[in-house]
Amino acid sequence: MIAVRPMMHEDVAEACRILNEIVATGGTTAHETPFSEVLFVQSYLDGADKICCHVALDDRGEVAGFQWLGSHDALPEDCADIATFTRRDPVLRGAGRALFDETVKTAGALGFRTINATIRADNVLGLSYYEKMGFRDFSIAHGVPLRDGTPVNRISKRFSLKE
Image 1 (cartoon, rainbow, N blue to C red):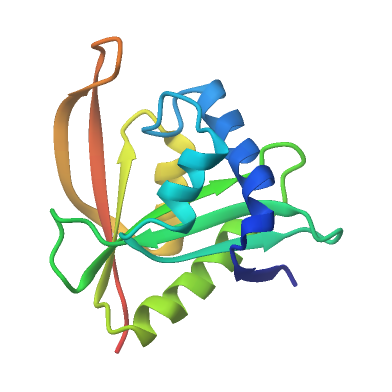
Image 2: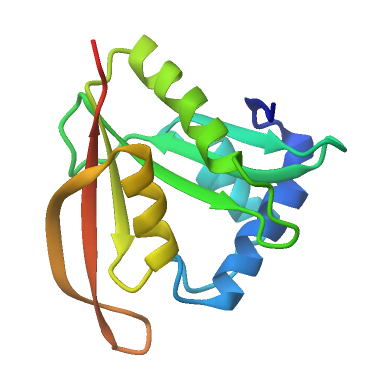
């Protein structure tokens, strides 16, 4: 069983490193520039839009991934936004599922009805992950430009929380 708990300040360095490695690889996140630890804390741990943020820990107690749930002005009040990032090397199989199970419990307890994930159309891993978690296509934002101007569609998927 993979341990999942709320993210704490002592997790920031490792979680930020995981995110920055994903950003550096490219193509699997909307983020295109690395995060400083200060920006990471503002974005994922202490931001006013944060609903919750959990980490998955490997058998050595090291952060293997994290999942953030937050509010977004473009979404209905009963719909939360989600972002998931897991370590690529070494991969901890099941980390994404364990994180999502905890996030669903939290979102449901707080009265949310749906969770939104917006994924780049070229992010095959992300699209597959959210599909496996039970998300279904909701909308497409066509041709959202990357920093270099390259247009990439963004696919929004929604997960309905059972009541």
